[in-house]
Image (cartoon, rainbow, N blue to C red; front, side, top):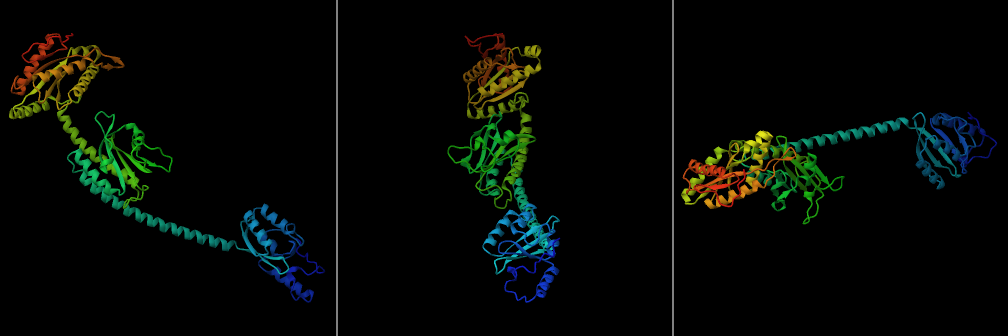
Length: 510
C-alpha cells in the first residue's frame, strides 16, 4: 500500500490553501490527525487528481494502493466503483452534475462485504473537493429495521381494522340474510316468494337493480318472475344467453377486466352497465333459475355490505333454498295428483275435478264435455319394441294432449294406455270437435325410439257430455267408454259420441 506518498517539496495543494502551516511539523501533525480518524478522507484537486488521502480510507473502502494513490484520477477511481457495483449510475450522474456546479454531494456506497459507506463531498476554496467516507452500515440497518418495524406495525393495525370491519359487515349481512330467510320460509307459494325477493333485494343491496328468472317446465327458456325495478324484467331469456348458466357458477362481469357480456344483459333500449353478476339458482343439485343483479357502483361498495358481489351470491343461495322448499312442497302435492310417466293428472284428481265441475255446472245450468280415449293396438308396441317404446308412445300422447287441450281442459291418464279429458263450458259437439283435433294430431305424430321411427300411433275416442249423457262422474265415464268401444269396433282411429254411430267420412285404420 502506498500510504507514504506525500511529496513535501510539491506545491501547496488546494485543500491547504489559506492554512497557516509555517513548517513541516504542522503538516505532519495534520497528516497524523487524518490517519487516526475513523473516517476515510480523500482530497481531489480542481482537475480531479488525488492530492491527499489518509490511511484509514483503505480499510473503510476495502481497497489497497493499486486502487488509490496520490495522482489517481477521480474519474478512474469512480469508474472502478461503478463497475464493481458499489455506486449506481444514478448516483454517479447526479454527483457529476454537482461537481460541475461546484456543489456538495453525497451518496451511499455498497461494498462487496455488504457494508454501507456514506460518501460525503464538500467543495474547497481552490476548486477541489474534500471527501469523507463514513461506515454507516449499523445506522442504515437500524433505520431499515425501524422502517420495517413501522411498516409491520402499520400492517398489523390495518389488518386489525380490516378484521373488525369484516366482522361487523359479516354480522350485518347475517342479520339481513336472517330477516330475508324468515320471510322466504313463510311463503306458501312461489308467487309470494317472488314478491318478497322484489321487496328485499333493493334494500339488501342499495343501488342495485336485477331480475329473477326460473326455468319453464320445458326447460328451453327461463321465464321472468320478478324484478327491481319492475319495468326491467324480460319475459323470457334463453339458457345459453348467460355465461353463469353455461359455466355452472356465478359470473361477475366487469367492463374493465377480461370479461364478456351475457347476451341477456344487452339491450337496444339502454346502455350496457359496467358491472353486474349472474348467480345460478340451484335447488337439490338442479339449476332451476338465475339471479341477475346490476350495480351502479363497483361490487364491494354497497352500503352495509362489504362485498356486494359476494353478498349477491349468498342471497342467491338463500333464495335457492327457499325456492327448493316451495318446489318440494309443490312436487309432493303434484306427485299425489299426477301420473309420473306423462305428467298428466291421475284418476283420483280427475274424479275430484269432475265432481267439482258437475257441482258448478249444475248450479250455473251449463254443460261440459268428457273425452275418453286410448292408443290403438298399444300392446303391439310393448310386445314388438319393448316397454320402453310403449312408454315413449304414452309420453308422446301426453305431450300432444297438452298441445291441443290448452284452454283450461283437465287432462288425465286413467291407467295403462287409457286417457280422459274434461272440457269445461263445452257441449257434446264441441267436445267431439276437440277429440277429432286430438285424433288427427296424434295420427300425424312420428314417435322415434333408439334413433328409429316407431309404427304410427292412432287413438280411438268416445265423447259424452254433462248433463245430456249423465249426471255423475261414473255415468259420464261409462257413456264415454261405451262410445270408445264402438269406435274400436268401427275400425279404430275413430271418434264416437255417446248414443251415436261414428261420423261418416272419418278414416278407419286398424
